[in-house]
Amino acid sequence: MVIQENLSIQRKLEILSDAAKYDVACTSSGVDRKGSGTGMGNSMACGICHTFSADGRCISLLKILFTNECIFDCKYCINRSSNDVVRTSFTPEEVCELTMEFYRRNYIEGLFLSSGILVSPNHTMEQLLRTLVLLREVHHFNGYIHCKAIPGSDPVLIEMLGWYADRMSVNLELPTAEGLKNLAPHKNRKSILKPIRQIQLRREHEQEHLGLPDMQLLRKQISNISKENEFGEMIARQIGLTAYQPRPKSGRHFVPAGQSTQMIIGATKETDYQIMSVSETLYQNFNLKRVFYSAFVNVNQDSRLPATTDGPPLLREHRLYQADWLIRFYGFQTKDLLSEKNPNFNVLLDPKCDWALRHLEMFPVEINKADYYTLLRVPGIGTNSVKRIMMARKSAVLDFRDLKRLGIVLKRAVYFITCNGKMMYPIHINEDFITRQLLEDKGKLPLGLGHDMSYRQLSLFDDFHVSPQTLAKY
Image (cartoon, helix red, strand yellow):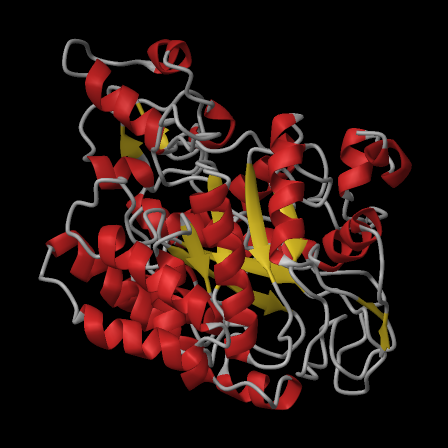
């Protein structure tokens, strides 16, 4: 480990923004908060303006690690303790300076703050909490903040952080406890799920206004866990005055945009069926907003890691996101899409098309009569399209020309629907025939099959065409 001291803030930014690129659980929506007129920034429900790299990673927020030092030795992580990489850390004041100055220049509209484990989980969480308190209370930053919670840290620290962040996330890391044991032996599933459950229950408690906690006990806990009692008392005073009131005058709520998590895909041998079953359980039991899937990038030479000669499994990651969307918004369940006999997604067809071809007995669907959820299962018809169809057919009997006027893309849907009992073309309802037609309509195989692929995460400096030397001029 090479720990660098006395680095400039620009050099730290280069190191710690690059170190954060493997964390894809980077969201910026789900909260609606206008500017107060007394601070800087706002956070609207439509989301932050995003910039995406070629591989789909969100790079619009100031996405950094607080530190890339870590006491853990997770085999898949570039920042593991056994790696010989340059180590450095921000101070809370430096993170605040970067966030405010980049916001003023319109480079970013929010902050995504994660961290390695510096000294201990509690010490790291204290530093993250100090950073958010300075941003909110001293700099009056009203923009979007997504912050990581550190498993194993004191529940009081997680509780306090939740009143200053818009969204929090705790990375599940790997889909199964067995995979975690093999590649991240210092971590365990129980310590990861504990803060996820705590955030869920606290959000539900705050939303239902079930009463106030014992503030005297809270202040005592803060004093015990804080190395700087003055800082701990200041936090307790702030939260005691605002955050724990059912309707705080400041308008602050506990993690208003909810929580998310991330799983690394391809580092262990879990099937798509196992991965989606875990995600479905998280959505049902922990009320998560998002589960993110991160294609495994082999950055370490370790015999316990799989060889990835073809690069990260980005196509598999894409299929998981498509299936995740179907579960969250289309009424599908994991058992509808996959099974133990058919445990992985079709690489040629998206999960919805693949499901429809395996259930041709349900098609064709009559556009003028089918209910909302039946229409949602038609390939090529999304949630907005179904709403337009349901609205339009109240006043007219729809035909294929009407569907085109409504903006319905018929390239895939035409094989699965009828209008007034007739299909658009004479079509033989046969799995092989429709599969060939769908693949021909696409014109080419999905990205990743027969194409050269490269993996590259854009850096902050790539996006804005600025260098550390340029920033130093401001």
